[in-house]
Each structure stands twice: as structure tokens, then as C-alpha cells.
Length: 304
Image 1 (cartoon, rainbow, N blue to C red):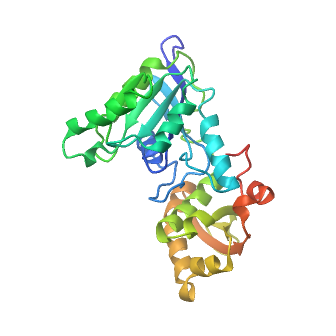
Image 2 (tube, helix red, strand yellow):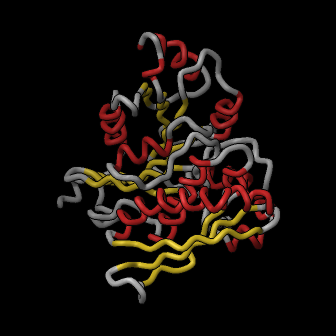
């Protein structure tokens, strides 16, 4: 590898909830490194996704959606998103086609105004427009708010213009060596990825307050003593109320059974092994506002 011709760097992906940040990260990396759901604040931790080619290596940081925080966890998530824009080579600000700039986007761009980094405007979901030219309105609105280094209307669903976005990022990357091994797609542990896989299934299977009130921790992963050639995975799902625990378990245990079955599909891929999954559900009252609980559940300010 020639250091004087090879490029490598870091890119922060920032935006309000549900604009497609995690979906884009998975699409660019070519494998699932961030969970996805249609629930706001699905992403709670900064997720590093690493794209390595023969010509460049880009470490993308997927961040929690920036929102008006109502809990200590929410405050930490928002802070983590802004902190992720420090020490990177460029920022991708993601939004969606709009006829009027949303207040949340105004706040984000206002907080980026002192940044000296190139900021790309990435407008996702252009496939939802009746005519592609309708995107011109959104572009004009946002260019009035910020001096973007580049504008990229894309559709992750249809893989439209994503290659142009990558080309734009490459132009601003510095020359230098790889920071990560070729086969590394994320910097998170297997335990973290398994816990996120379980949480994703709960997000997609439940509604109302449940998705925002659950946390998941993998307690142990070990070779099974009882079942030959199996791994035993022990994990705990935490909720804030007894009523929520009942919902997660479900009538006659049907909900927890479904969560387990769907989670196993992802966990087998992560471990590349046959798996036995043992799930427990416990109550930690108001854990989202308790610093000690947040730390125990992996949401310390250092970990986000």
C-alpha cells in the first residue's frame, strides 16, 4: 500500500431521527453494523462502520438522532452526536425532502456553524418524490442556511446517487495509512452487537412506550455444556415498569418466544455458530434518568 496515494479518514453522520443514517451506514459497509427500526432514537450509541477498499478506508460514525431530550439518556445521546463531529475529516448532515425547513434541522445546522470542517448535505428518500426535480426546493432551502461543501440527493432504497456521495467524500479525505484491519467492519464488541440485535427485534415487535423503555445487556457467551457444538448466550432485557415486563413476556410467553426466535437469526450470523439463547426480563425503575443504571446498562457518557 502506497501511503502517498492511499486515502483514509473519518466521517460523522448526523441528523434528526429517522432520516436513514443507520440504513446508509449498513448500505455503505455492505453488512449490518447498526440496527434499524421505524422508531425514533433507535440508535443510542455512536456506531463506527468501516469501509475498506484498495484505494481508501473510511470510518463512518453513525450517531443517535438529535432530538429534544426528555431524559438523562436522551441528553447523553444528543451530546454524543455533537461530540462525534469532533476529530473527523468531514460531516454528512442528513435530512429528507421537505417543503419547509424543520426546526430540528435548523438547530443542528446552527450548532455546526462554527465548524471548520466540510459539511455535506445528504437528502435521503428522494424516491418518495413524484418528480426528481422536486428536490430543488429542499436544496434551495437548506443552502440558504449553511455553506455546504457538497449536496447529494440520494435514495438508499434505490441505490441512487450513493456512489456519487462516496466519490465526494473521497475528494476531501487526506492521504494516509489504514487505521483498521481490512476485515474489520465495526469497532463494537460481539456482546454489544448481540444486545443490539435483541433490542432491534423488540423495537419492531412492540409499540407505544415499550421501545423507548427497554435496554438489553448480554451477560455471558460461552460454549454449551449441555448441547454439543452450541454456544450459550445469556442476555437480560430491562424495562422500567412491571406492566412493560408483562408485555415483553406476552400472553403465555408468546412475545418473549418471538423475540428469541427472531434474535437467534442475527446472533447465529454474528457468532457463525449454532446458538442457544437464554433471555430474562427484569425491571429497573426509571433507569433512563438514573446515572448509575445508565452506566450499568452501557450508556455512560464515555460509552455513547
